[in-house]
Image (cartoon, rainbow, N blue to C red):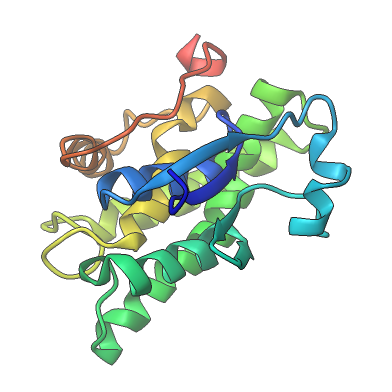
Length: 206
């Protein structure tokens, strides 16, 4: 796998799962390198030479190194799987809208709530669940009558939104009030090459 894209990852990170999922869906030649977060490997050399911020995921594509899950999705789609990132200005802007949603409301809502239950993070769980309710109400409406978030086929917008949405019950955020979201998650999971993130039996998923 000498020409494989090297993905520095952590199995229980939804940010990392985005990259693993996209690589699987797009059929990219890749190699997974697990970073031991519990041992602090991400805060030490040689990892810090790849990402001075000390965070996963990071990819190495030959000599090119890139951190940040959404930036990685854009790079991989543009270079290797252009069907996953539309080029017309309106559709590309819509994809960016959902990447921003993933980096903000999804990260501060269902992802943060899950950090509390899975990793014991010292965050405000009630605030995170409130943000999760807001963003899921929004997504439920946006998915009304739609199969995918942008256009008529899956894009990196769907990959960015999927992981923490699907695992929201682990953070005590129920998906029962959201039939459109639940149907949408099943569509993502039915895509050829789909790869699940390991489940954690905590919160409502216990």
